[in-house]
Length: 221
Image (cartoon, rainbow, N blue to C red; front, side):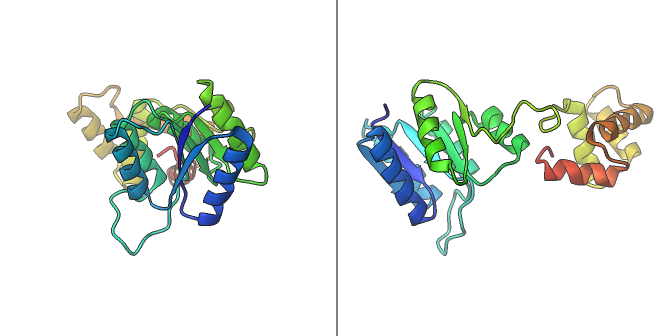
């Protein structure tokens, strides 16, 4: 089991509950708490420089703004920075976020090891997550279904480029010119129409505005 763990959570009450639970249930001897992302990063950096690194980081995603200027303002930014500093550290996210697309992105883009969705059973789930990650397994809260196609739809790179351009207000003709400049094919207006129509069907929408709004809500663009 892990011996040295850092909890990054901006509510002291949550921190104390997590620390008490992990200490009682798993017997982790060294548990530390930080309320701000910058301080959590600095503590990990110092521990690494002293050749006494943390083995596990448990972090929330959302942190309230501080009256002090912070370089890292979210759990995502903290995770990305820590991954560069100490690639081998295990990371479990403990957050209210329940959007499967966003959770999947945390695994795919930030290489997290576990995800716990805060709720009535979240402390018990956090114990299970830490146990699983300690055994080099991945963990996701049962209520987060990462396998449902309706929740996580994999867009092609060209789809994303077209959709982001539409969201920014570009016309199909302007998008075609952008694709041609980047030497991306197919780049005809008719192929763009076909791609967008395919996405209408996939996401059950009737127009571009509705499509863009739905994909933003899902965290896909």
